Length: 126
Image (tube, rainbow, N blue to C red):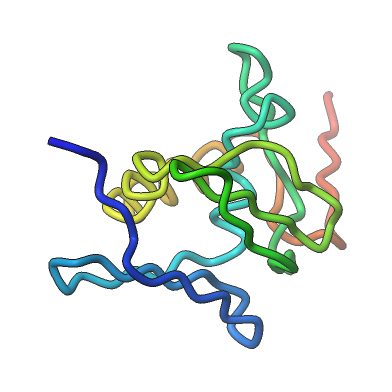
């Protein structure tokens, strides 16, 4: 079965999200923060050792471009613009949003980190 390709792609600047529509009538709204922290870029994936993204709560999408016939290139207002979101990866992010988001929140908690860019965690070691 071929990768589901969105039939509509809408950058929603006010809500800082990307809305994807599919031929079967399904629609998904993916927040910019979610897309940013799960970027397929080497910067985030860390060449096999993922780098936890923190402080991205207020990030927004500033541009969306197609990359050939297989992906989107997303540009975020924090300057991040590497990594191509293939149709397959976007569909996985859309259909697994709750699971992936909760796993990210668990990783943040375990690291003592925050989504808030104005908060930094300080750990005191006795």
